[in-house]
Image (cartoon, rainbow, N blue to C red; front, top):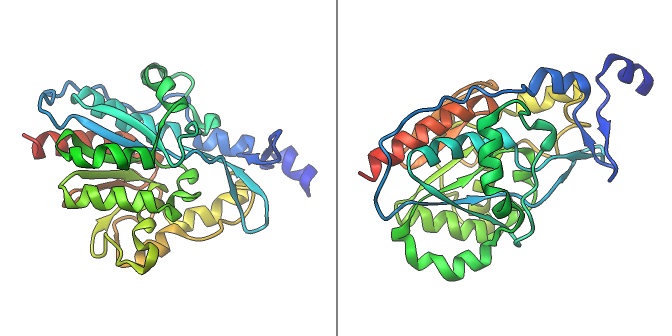
Length: 286
């Protein structure tokens, strides 16, 4: 069976650390060499609240139900396209991970022929490799909410490792909520929202409309070797059970804004999310 899958190009690729990245067919179907990024000349924000905290995962391997490890991290397109739009709108970024370890990217998903994505990645590469610790951000920056516009949690299955169980993520999301900051996320990034239920707290986003990667697609992708097995749990179903109103049923370009929560459904929504976030922040902070 494994040999047949290899011949068909649907066998996940075994990496040196024992994890699996997507198959040749999955990469061909789901990883374009160039994105749909639109360069837009925004009227740049020039106020004091010009900082955006980007919470990245530092974890690489997500354990599937069958015990196999999926080689994941932050999805580069889901991280960098929104950053491109927000940068063009006049905002700056502070990169952080739970413990200050380097942010991990799904480099197999990097759009190798997209110069705009390459450029912003290089601009922030040092910060991705040497990010702040969330605990340090909490101790030094929570009293400076007047300097921050938003929290951004990129997608990628890596956002489901550790971040949903991190009390510091809960603290920061609640701080953003209480001080009127925007919260931006897409795809599997809303896994971070589960942190707000730790210690039996009420779900912070109950009743909110949001777009998130559908479990139905995650259930299908092992068939083409994108994932090496079934997901450990369904993210969209958990969010729905907690009271979120899901705006999409497909992996598409759906984006959504509800109060100061801005979300997108999949990597296909990365450009649209960036545009929506830039517009909402410029409008809300004017």
